[in-house]
Length: 263
Image (cartoon, rainbow, N blue to C red; front, side, top):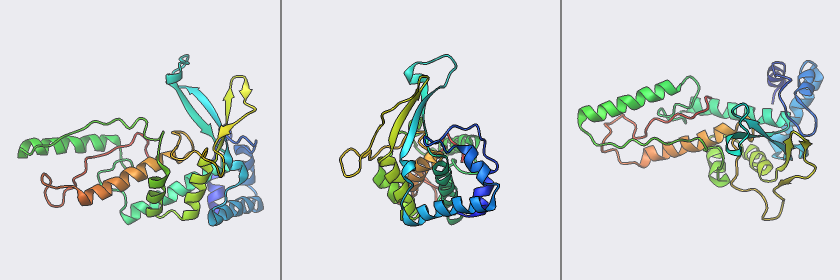
């Protein structure tokens, strides 16, 4: 992590964003970003974590909060659960995701039929789908179109394929270790209108209680890229193995995909 990256992000950060069970909120890091030596200190700490694969101990604590999607509607199934992480850990995740997606774009890892990427939109995905259906009708080729809602695609992700996909996309093993190990051993506190809970729940080291296979939808600022990486990796593999009876040479056998979160 460079000092310039640290200062660029935190000097523009919104201090009103809630985070950090430890109390080190956005304001602390934003104030430090205006001091060269403090900025260098914070950047060096994050770089040491990235190089060694050892996260800060306080990164293993999160606060779960339920927010109303619709004002006045407090039914459980209408609430959105988010997890407030440590502010610097949340930024570290975003930076890793940004670097990975930039590298994947330049190396051609993002399939052309995936519209959940920078510079694309859901309108392009819908238009592509219409063209594919019209082409099938004109050429009299049979095809099948499935409408699948990925509304819960961030809730559960198996860590093993996620780790392999992240490594395949160029993320160092130390960074993958921090992401997955912190998630598996995370201790969660609950925040309500009455305050924060005194007891926590979560995974335990060297026991069967580590939370393997779970990735909360709002666990961190980079949660979306886990699903996108796995989907794009699967699509690339499918492109190499699917039968291409319908598609002409040069055409892709995968349908257009568009995630509900824009990169």
